[in-house]
Structure formats: C-alpha cells, structure tokens
Amino acid sequence: MTARPRLARWTVPVLLTTGALLLAGCGEQTAGGAGAGTSVAEESPTAKPTPSETDESTEPAEPAEPTDDGGSEQADPASGGLTGALLPAAEVPGFNDEFTWKDGTTSDQEPPELAGTCHQFEVTSIGAEKVAYRTYDPAQDASSQASELVAEFPDETTASRAEQVLLAWRKDCAKNLKKFDSVDVGDLTDVAVEGGTGSWYMVSYGPAEDDPESGYFDAQGVVRVGNRVAVLRLALIGQDYNYEHGQEPMVAAVQAAAKRL
Picture 1 (cartoon, helix red, strand yellow):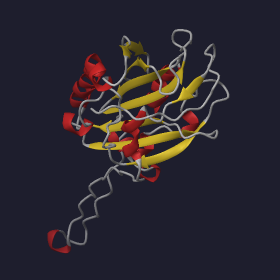
Picture 2: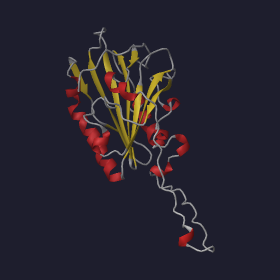
Picture 3: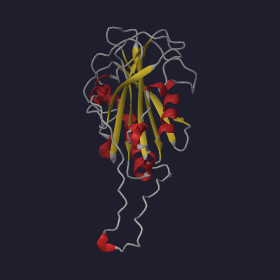
Picture 4: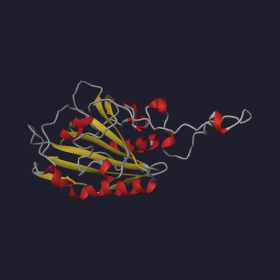
C-alpha cells in the first residue's frame, strides 16, 4: 500500500489525553467510500402454478414465511438490506461524552483504498458476497472521519475463515505504514459480544505531520456474527491514549456493531 497523505486535525479532550484529533479514516483508505448505494437481499418469489398445471380447486401457494435464524433473511428490505446492518451515527461511540457523529457517505461497495489500515486485499477476495460501507463525520465542525464495513459471506464457515484472515493481516501491518518513523501494532484484545466473536487492536504511528510531539492512534475492530463480519475504524491524533482497560471507544463500537449484525 502507498503512504497515507496528510490528515485532517481537530482538538478534542479525550479523558486523560491532552489533545485528540480524529483521523479521516486514517487517510487514503476511507476516500473510496463516496457514492451512496444500498444492497437489498433478494428473495426468490414463491412459484405459483399456471392454469395448465392445475385445476380450479388448487389453491395458490402462500408466500414463504421469513426465517428467523440469524442469517441474511433477517435484514429488513425497508432498512436497506445489508446497509441496514451498518451502525447509524448515533450508535458510534465518541472519544468522550461530548463527542458525537453524523453519517458521512454510505455505499454498497468496498472503498478502493480498502476499509482497514492493515488490510491487504478486498474482502470480496476472501469470500464476501455482499458489502456495505459507511463513513462518519464529527457533528462538530471538522473534516475527519471514522468508518465501518459490513461483509456478508455464503455461510458461517466462510465468514469465520475470513475473520481469521483479517486478524492475521495485523501481523504485517507495519508494511502498510513504511512512511512513518515509528510504528507500533498492538496486541489483539478479545471483546465479548452477543452471539459471535469480537476483537480489536491499536495501530499507533508517527510523528504526526506538522506536530512532531503527537502521533496517530488508529483503532481497528473486527466482529463476526453468523455469516457476517464487520470491520470498524476509529482514529485520532494526540500525545497519548489513556483509557481504562475495556473502556476504550473501540470496545463499545465492536459491541454495538455485533447487535446490528
């Protein structure tokens, strides 16, 4: 991957941090989210007999009842199908109690620059059949972003394998950040979620452009429920990143995303 361009900045108090600035989807990787679109799960209509195949006493077949097994059939077409599994801005955790988000762009395609800082290939190349992607903008006056990608796979086995691939890319993440003098890829931390598996890790690198005393804190989250996987990104610029263990914004984001899947 190529080096990331200059990042938009905005000062935010973050618990014990001296200053925090939200990253625009960690640079170039969120740029491809433009272009709203939706992906609606299609259901095959129930076949009805033709006059030549039945007599007048035959009743037309009733439409099949929707399933409730946790699969893709649960998506409400009115909510945009797979797009409806994306977090609305109000459910994306902020960096403190005052920090809020608004929806940016929503698409039914993966961004060309990939959704995760450590990603090596498109999720469609590791088995995803459908994708929905959304960026989030701070409600305050700033141009920075966070993002979420939801991918749907043909079955749980394929989704589980894809989840492991996404997490394995963490080990080689430094290769994507060669531009920076200092790169640290944190350990993988499990997150308890309803009905699935979740985890997150921090990628920190720097120094930040025009601010050698600060660096980039780029949190990456992955969650799988059934045959769906979500990838989340929350990033900021600051001199430190001080949260109590388990209280980091990405932990809450992973748990919120799991409920939507």
